[in-house]
Image (tube, rainbow, N blue to C red; front, top):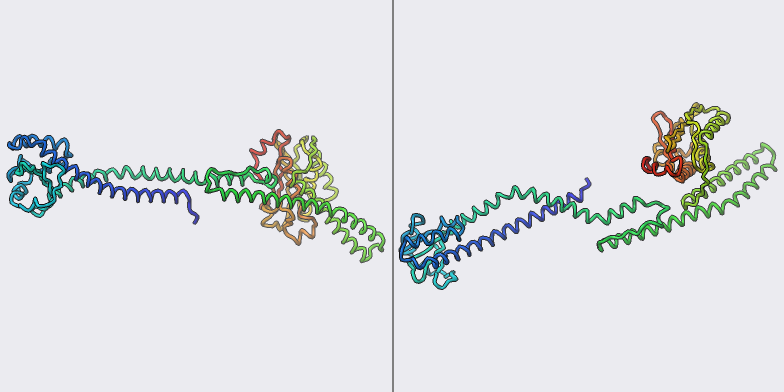
Length: 475
């Protein structure tokens, strides 16, 4: 199963984002815990020093510390702080047992002094089985501020829980941001490849030389683009050599083949009529004629490939020509029934000689590959801008790949049958080139009723070519 690059990039971005968020969350939780603890110690020291002038009175000391902690020591912590004086709790809240124990445990203050103030002693040590943060004035050691580590962690957990409650709102935003990042990342990454794709789609054998050089804003794609541009140059050289070979070969073969044909005709006239030798010579002359036909068609195709096929545009009465062809076909091929639906007086601005060659090729194929009791139907219509000419004929043993390969050069379908009826396999290719020369299309479509329809669509005038490009499919 093929995978989507956008989904892959999306998964990578979301995974990396989740990992970064989790790592930063853990690091931030660790650092914030340390920061909160530092601020706790600072505020405990500041509270003692701020209220030292009223340390002789429990009531005044309590009044002094209460608003201080509410304003500076995270309102939640003010309810967890215990103020002690001479082993008793100052005020109505606090841990009375801790105040009593601190006066009895002389070893508690043997711990390291964490205070940054010279007038305050701050110790973190175990008291009654719990870890406590306790600060006291050095001048008034009977006054202490206590904070249990467990209560401090409980407050931090409440803060972290409040933060985690926002995650359901954050996750959709994270996914949306990841999707947008993946989309723009893929778009930016595939931009140069998209330019190559467009260039390849517009690439035609006749436009290889004039194909624009593809560039990229990213140096990482320079090698890839260089290979692509080199490939265009090699293709252009290969097509040029192939076209030149076909044209040169056709030119070089015309003269010797014409000489062979003349000599074969002379030999046929010199031998007894109806003799086996004359039959063999006639067969040889027919093959020479076939080679001459192939060389002429190859020359015509090589001109089409090189865009050197000349047009002599004239107003051509296509309806009249088809009516004459239908009338003549009844005389030359009476075994085939002819049907017609021809729009009268349809004038086409085209090259009459090339169009007559196209129609004759199609008609000849329709006769050659027909059934003994078959029929041919001509249909000609126009909408004022476009003409449509369809030639349908019955057939048998239609190859499965006929629709796909009909316009391939030297394609002859059933080779045994094609050899029997003659032909070179170049006729439809020439018809296709003539149609394109007139900004038209030529399509072949087998039907379920054992018939084949060849349809030519083209603009009636050169000014109607834009309608053709916008409305008709390409071959």
